[in-house]
Image (cartoon, rainbow, N blue to C red; front, top):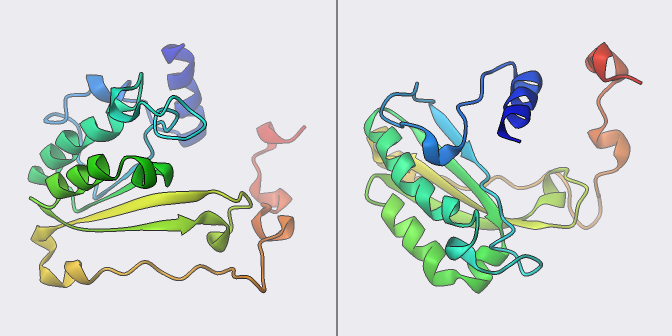
Length: 174
């Protein structure tokens, strides 16, 4: 339930949960410098409902644009939106509309990234949309995605991603 999820969030991050995204008053919350968003993807995946923004939670991906635009007017400098790459493949027009809305206040760029190149040991590809406020100036339009650390000759292995024991809080050690 939501109460348990909010407790889990606070336990993991040390910060209070603001609750469901659609219930937040974006005119009253503290504005972050950078917003990282990974809205639920089951409605956007080929293994999910494929109902996209008409799905049970899929609408959040499109709805968040209004929230992000509100936060930018209040000082948000950038937003990073992450979603399944299937969103761009199967729902190209919807994703383009989302980016076009953002372009009213942001410089926008996107890429489909095989996350294993950055140390994720899964074989997924993710769509990343980077939106940098136009208030940052025209140099912000020149954003380029970094190259991954890994390639066809060097893949991430467990040792690359494991935390050393002294970095793991005792409450998480069995």
